[in-house]
Structure formats: structure tokens, C-alpha cells
Length: 603
Image (cartoon, rainbow, N blue to C red):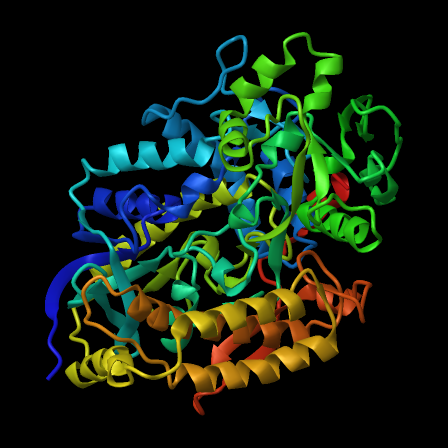
């Protein structure tokens, strides 16, 4: 008979990155019992990989910036299929959340007069990203952890959640196992916050670490929650392409924010070919110039490398496909050129981009102060996720909340750089606050023991098939299929082939087998992760087939233009009574006359 330990909390937070930590801090501050579950070790959250900065309209570098400009930049970047209410709250509250981090001990870079320094980033009209060199996410995690340890929460490290459980229609528990010993734990909770991050490990080339297997998306889906926008995958324009062992590792947008330029094999700055007319008031041929935003009698010059990420990624793919790529299938990112006009350029680069300098030196034996980097697109972020209420962050399942990358809405079809970190702290706080309120108003419910037992038996089933399918081989085949057929450029025929291939992969997954015992068994962990990856991959494929247009992170070769009718809907994915996945259109929410006027004003 399966056995498990039982642990009780008022609020259970699953995921210990920026969103999870901020949610746990907020919930604990409201006097409820909080449990924090992390798949890896505390401090190793993927938030540490967010390097460039946190977006907030502090106006420290350019006083023309405001929440009104920030919200319109976010909506424009997301091409207006965002949850407009979330975009509004995010822009209004991000400055306070950044100042809060500073009060808790975050050591941001400073201006000459002592204010928090802000840098340019793709899609942002003004310098808006508060940063700590190129290690901003790491500083955020350090600050949140140092503050959070005093809040009285219980931390459960190296624990993976495998299923959510409901009673009377609302969530009441989560089944998990500890990765070290393989022992099962049932967490009983009045409210649960999912903050599990993204789905990057569904693709072959990704900046995401091993934890990003779509756990939260799949858990919520199987618990009956709605997902949305799953077709929108962000391929960051600049990941490492050489050597192969580090292919996909992120090269922060901060390199371009500090003046890095993109060159093809002919040495030409190809991004000047692709400035959209909506942005173009002037182009220039010298590397330190760009197009200009004109606002009244002032202007802000911007390099074309800082167009939105989806646009830059497609331009790089074009250069490679047309034979103008670098030797290893990317393009060149050159920050070293700034020595032509900056006397101490090498010192400046090492000070502003210390992680990038050491990353390329250690992994590729390249000195970025003298030599261009080879970069190419890498799967980086999913704009889609759990459909939540913009104010409370609660999903369509009562008591189940979501924040951060696992939640949909804020970013629409394409996330602006830096909005991810402010997303974590703005909506992490809101999720924790409303989860605590829900827990205070709700009675504890007991998960069904029969359902929990069945979930345990399902997890252990691979041990009954020691000669079954290899989980690593199935995951590898899935990643290659998604990369090649549902990647940066899509078309219906290839995605239909992917949907058919997915059925075969699912059949193979039902025959997966592992050997050995439950302690320290990475093959077993992979078999469990595989179920989540297959669920989120189906959601991506099904949603991408439904959206017959190109918008943001979803580009279709067979429908290269935007469809005005599709610009007012989100595609929602939900598990039906028949157990099958269903996709339906829903109107974009949160649109108000006030926000429409703002969009028109700042266009």
C-alpha cells in the first residue's frame, strides 16, 4: 500500500523564485502558516538567470518616464492581447516594489547623484531597468531570501509536486515527493500559490535550467484550471551558440543595452534593415546612432538592436538562413567596438557586464572586451500560462493562485525585457496577499485518500517496467520535435505533423521504465517531468494551430500578417469533462476607455 507523510499549512507556495518568495513573504506577513516548496535548492531559482534589470518607471535617468508610458510600452510590446488590467497594475506598482527591495537591502547600481541607475532595454521607450551590473536576478533572490527567512515560513527543498487535489470544487492539497529519498508528502493547504516558472525544457535549445518542465502549467490544467496564450513562446535573440555544450545559455540584453551591436558575417549591422515604419523617424549609419522617438520637443535615440525580442530573433534567423551567419550558425554581437569612443572601454565592459565577461572567458575562451560573441535565438520564456484574475491572481479553480511566468496575461504576445522581474514582485505580492485572505476565510478540507493513493501508484509505475522506454530518449525526441516544428517560424503542415508525433510520444511515455530504487534516481525524476512536458507541448501546438496570424512570439509563415479580429481574443485551453484538451477563444480582458486613450496618446 502506498504511504505518505502529511504536512499542514494555511498557504502552500510551490516555487521559490522571485514570485514564490515574494508571495510567501506577503502571505506570512498576514499571520498565516506558510510552506514554501522548491524543486531544487533554495537560492537556485531560475530568477538568478534574469540579468539585465527590473523594469520600473522610476524616472531616475529620464524624468519623462511614468507609469502611463510603461503601461503603453507593455501593451504595444504584447500587441494588445495582454490582460490590460494586469498591465496597468504592473506599471503603477513596480516602482514601489523596487524601492521596497532597496529598503530590504538590494544594492542597485547608482547614478552620480545617488539614485538607482536605470538602463535602456528592448521595447522600453526610456531607460527603465534598475540593475545590479548584469546580476540583477541574483541580487533579487538574495534580498528576498534574506528578508524571507525572518518571516517564519517553512521551506521544503528538493521537493517536486506531482498532483493537486480538490474537495468541493476548491483546491485543498498537493502531493509531492522528496528528490533525495523518493518519499511522498501530502501537503494539506487552504490556498495554494503556483510560482513554478516556465516550459523551456520542452525545446532543444533553451536558456532555461532543468527545473523548467512546465510543472505548474500541467498541475493547474489537470486540476481543471484554464490556461491561455500558450502559443506565445519568446525566443530570446541572444543565446550562446558555441561551444555546443553551452548552446542556448543566455547572453543578457544588457549587452545591447550597454551599446552592443549585431553584425552579420559581412560585418554589416543588419538590424538597420528592419526598423518598423511605426518606429522610424530617422535612421543612421554609425554604430552609436539609431532611430529616434519624438515626444513633444524632445527625443530619445534608440539603437535598432533594442527592438522587441521577437523581431530581433526573426531578423537573426533570416541572416543565418540566407547565408550571412557566423561560422557556428548565429550572428556576431559586438560590444568591443565601443573602444572607438570610450577611453577605458575594457574596464567599463568588465564593470557593467561582469557575468558576461566571465561566462564567455570561462566557457568559450573569448574576451568580449576585444572579440565579438557568436549568438543566436534561444527558447527563453512562455508568455502563456494559467489564466488568472488581474487583481487577485486567482485561477479559475477556487483557492489556486498563480504568479510569475506560470501565470498568463501581463505580457500578451511578447514580453519586454525587464518586465519579468517586476512581474514577479508585483504579482507575487498580490498572489500572497489574496491567498492569505482566502485561507483565513476558508475551512481546511481533506484530500481524498483514494485519489492520493492512485497518484502515488501512477508515479511509481515506471519501476514496474524496468525494460520499458527510456525517459531521456523520449524527452530528447520531444525537444527536437518542438524545436524544429513549433519553433520560431511555424506553419500548419509542420504543426499538424508535430501533433501527430506527440500522440506517439505520449504512447511511448505510457511504457516508460526506470531501474534502481527511489533514492537519487534521475531517470525516475525525468519520467515524472515527462508527463508535464507532454501536457504543455500539446497546449502550445493546439493553441498555435488555432491562432491563424502572426503576432509577437507566434510567427506563422503561412499567415505572416496580423488578423485584426484575432487582436481582441486570447485562446484558452482547458481540460474537458471527456478528459480531452479543448481550445476556445475568449475576449481580451481589462480594456478600459482610460487605457485606450493612453495608448493613443503615446503611440
